[in-house]
Length: 462
Image (cartoon, rainbow, N blue to C red; front, side, top):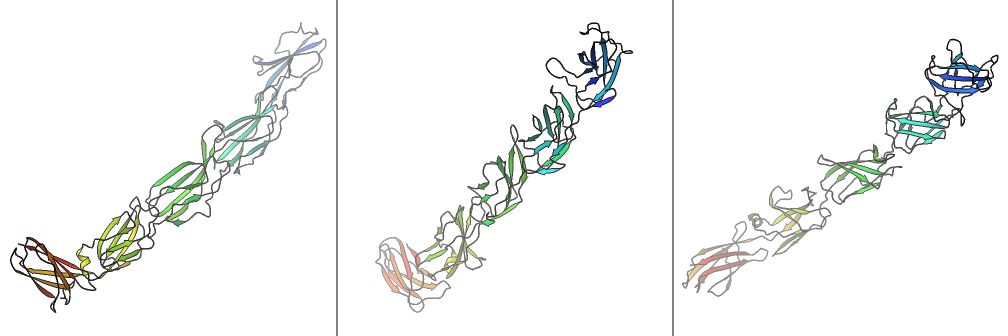
């Protein structure tokens, strides 16, 4: 064994020495035998390192071991001479075991599930140490495990989409670490969710977004880009679906989802995001818009809509709403205009529409223009003086909204201190009342004509 390299614990042999009945064997890490690692005794010219309980093993070294023989004539070795460096029988060797060969995973092999590491057995191995790291120096191993087998299935969640490194070495009978194997590489690819094909791509109802389950995922993270440019993240979703109790704003929403995988002891590791998905949210026009109009009222009604906080109503004199008569909001699915604006007096047909508005003041679609067919209004003009307890003449002229005087309009005059009287206008649309009010107050005039809205006037009694 002089000047050789041993892949296992060495067996020392030598030629029998004249007169020697026993031998001491000394093994050191240096030629001066100042760093002795083993001392053995034998009665034959051979020695296998051992003690009284089990074999003695030597670590793998890249430097040389040195050994010497001290013969003794006594069978118990009691008269052995001291170590004489120049004259003692000496030898040298190197101890370098054969490391395991890595079988799998192969170079830059990608895994979507947990990898199983496999390697060849090493002679004299009692157990194996496996290390996995994100750097080739193994400064901070992700895994540092011991196993009696020549394979190991990891339960550690490794970082995704990066090259990882692994190596194995054997520990011998005395749990002395032997030579590391060559460094292998592999990649861990964490699974990405896939959005469900049944997800709605547009609508006004609160959506339910679903995706495929990812094996090994502990939870999911949902990232949303809102139509107004803001971004929201929702984490620790424990099911492969998400729904909403509130969603305001119209436009295109973009979303994607990723899985979170548990680490060996605590915490999680995120996987890659799914492909970006889009959802166009609209606030549809209210349905069943109806107009209930009569001589004495106008009521606009429609069906309520989900997610709408209030409604915006517009009334205009043109169907393109370029000339609006009234714009208002209401919390109810109906609106009764007061018709107090001057524009109501001149129009015979008006148009209206309604749109829903959500909590963030986002307005939905308008309904189609609806008509309000109105009776033309009458106008009354009163002239003259009404004096208390004096005979007075009061002239009433009845006209259409465009100023045309109307014949045959029925005019009724009432008031404090007079008896109600009804008469019709003449061909010039006028009529004169002779009254003698007994009390101060007001004289009230009501003008009516079929096909017209009633008109009202008043004159103060002085």
